[in-house]
Length: 184
Image (cartoon, rainbow, N blue to C red):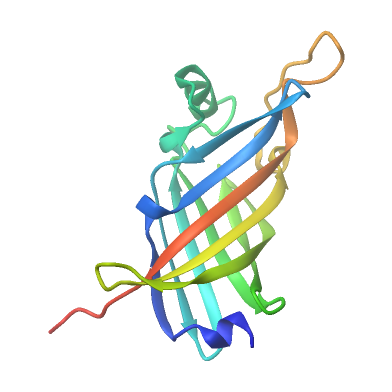
């Protein structure tokens, strides 16, 4: 059975207190630095075996566990949060890709650059939480080249490498709650 046909029709809102939108990048060519965005909204819809997904991220909420690095990432060297405060993703298609997987194609906008990307999500299950909310779990990842989005700052190391890798892994751990229609 496909993931899309097994989910109920409706709107689903990402629960940011039980989800994570993050990234990892190679630092100094020897280790990975991981970070996340602490403020974002997102929703998706499922209807007739098709779906959509929209996410909006507050750039200033970047958190790499280093205030200095976070400040540098918010600066014009990278995200230029003052002029480009949001990162957005808008799906263009969602397709089943096996019994527990979906592939979401869509447009990612960072700064003033929009590029098509593909994110493969694994459906991790459904549960009803103690408050009666129907929850649906998805985990996914995609790799982008940050330079494609105008994030070009770097520093050359003595050994010939660079301080920040070009390839960035985007990471999504999503707990979505079925939206309950307002009572009239």
